[in-house]
Image (cartoon, rainbow, N blue to C red; front, side, top):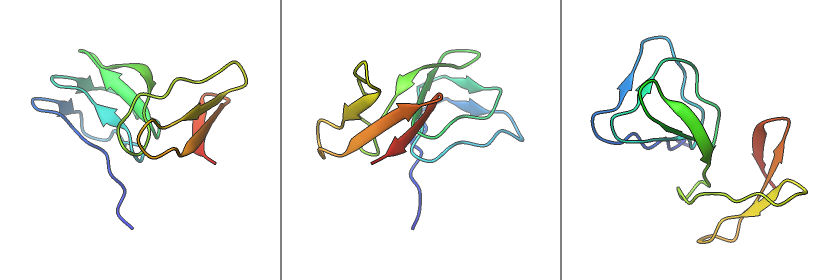
Amino acid sequence: MKLFAPISSFATIICGNELGEFCLIGAGAVITKPVKPYALMVGNPAKQIGWVSEFGHRLRFNEKGFATCTESGQQYQLKNEEVNKI
């Protein structure tokens, strides 16, 4: 199975930095450190501004750390700054 990590136009990935599965890199972002799975990264240097589902939709976690993808209905859990599909 191939893992999807969309990279927008003019984004730059500095050598040696790994991109986590299903992360999303915004247009013009400059990645200077490893990216966590499902992370949403923007800016120069890139900063994480949130989390996305495998379909690329922004995940909004509730107070218990759970979120649902608006397209697929898949549930995710945020625990210890890591997102896992349930």
